[in-house]
Image 1 (cartoon, rainbow over the protein chains, first blue to last red):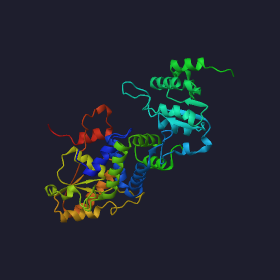
Image 2 (cartoon, chains in turn red, yellow):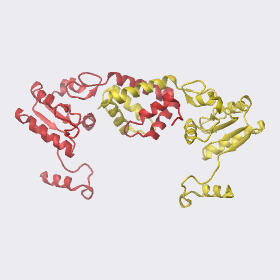
Image 3 (cartoon, each protein chain N blue to C red):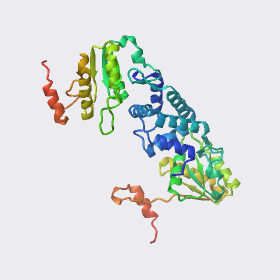
Image 4 (cartoon, each protein chain N blue to C red):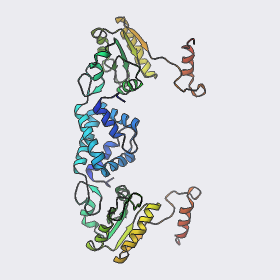
Length: 199
Length: 199
């Protein structure tokens, strides 16, 4: 489609590859930016250039920030001896939004997958084992997704950590907030029943 | 929400203001960029900076491109004596995608609105009148949206052009391609009936 000039068309094509945007919505977004160049496009271009120039993976936990050691790992108040293992940076952000966790994280960057040849080294599992000693960890919380891939990976990590003697725990299973039995899957109901608590 | 570092959070907030993106999808898009910095974020940051630096309104028609005079106005093969008046650059792109029009455009940048104090000068209507003589126009096609605002503006422009003696036409009204009578509104059906053609 040659309806927009070259540079603009190239920008639309790149925007269209972002998740949640297609060619149509990318065109709308770019057009909106073009019409508000001073208040929308320029600040966005500057913010994106800044983040592109400074963003990097935390050398300790794998979180993404502007520093070699992310603010969470750099915060000594979070040296609680408890590390929460997540698949992805988005999961770390979700836990931080929820707010309940005060320790540090370890971001795997995915799940084990023989098909896509994602092995333990790619997922930074050796680094997790090393952190048990170097940070004197008491507990590792496996906060992986409740999917087959997530649980397979959790099982592997639990085995890998067993020799160290560290306590390994996992997020509880049960009804989500606002969940109605009639709409929940059998697996969730069974798990909630098995993990029932005295009130 | 302080879950992501400052610069990244600022980028998410700016992305969330684009049409079609909310806070959630902006976060997903930014995270996708952060995870593919070399192949997604860097090219996008460069393309956006380039467009932000070079994009400008065409001095003649109001189209947006990298030049003071856009490629359509600069193309002498399009000096057909016919100008198509559209509300917005997105409408110009839509007409170019459709492909049937070989003349030049005039982008109003909106519709007349007393409430938002958008008058004829803001919509570049005097410039349109001036182009009739300077470009020796035979016909002005009003390709405004079939909305109340679009049609009010079309009516005003037709009146403003009347003294010049130029032919003023408007897009036909009727069934859209694939339209089914049962699902179309009464206005469209009435318009299609009134504008019926012998076959």
